[in-house]
Length: 371
Image (cartoon, rainbow, N blue to C red):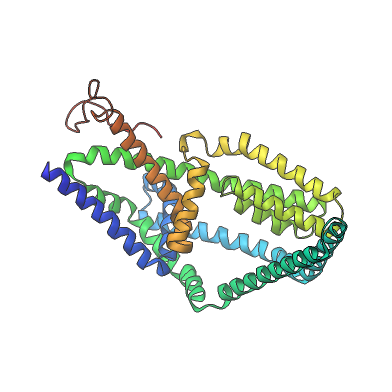
């Protein structure tokens, strides 16, 4: 019993120490997190080349170079279009703001007949103050992101260090896994390997599938908004596609932003209504066809749990926390399901019909099941 408690305390201490170190070093972890994500995504391709007798070092270089070349080509093709639309958006923003203020004044004028003039004046002043605070805060955030020394250092490290980290992880991926496997407690090695397999299945299924969903919907929204005639349709479409990564909230946020800009541009409800219909169709396709086909139910990450993880890890670790939120949500989800399965088979749940605990040296299959 004392030995079991000692092991439990050891692993609790290890988790707490890892979380503390992650929080302490969060400002420098961005290139390592991105490099690890790239290596995780590209490892299956390198493994296929390895099975074709191509040395893993050469395969890692070729795959990583092709991946980076694809990204650079995508940026070179897209940036000129985005730059033109972003510059136009910035130049038109004051007129959009003035239109929004005029609409607000018109709305307040309609209320003057029903409200006391002092209340209307207070409401107008409060709305103006809030708009000013929002614009001021947004400007400060953008300025700090673009000019801050830490931001510049992060961008430089992301450009130069991330490919190096990704290459070494790709090259040594199998060696690293074998080394970590050799460190596992021998008594529980089989159970840990099973949970690691489930975590890998969940991560790969979600990340690769969700990336495909974001890309498809970004192209769909970009083209559709451009056809509708909305200015900056390509930029909005890509932003909406990226926001789809956050279930429900992403689509709603992108839709509201597009509707607001359509109303500011056209000044009537015809085009905003078309944008609303577009996003209704897009969300229907995403929820019923695209996401089930590309991501699948096997991932088993509930949208509410995913949203909570994004907010929680973002609050704890900043931007790096947002990047690791989905992997950590998958890991925690698999471990919670494993613990729940153990609990349901233990005397704590049912003392009479409790099932025996899995013995890795016996013939009973491991607990955990598919997520």
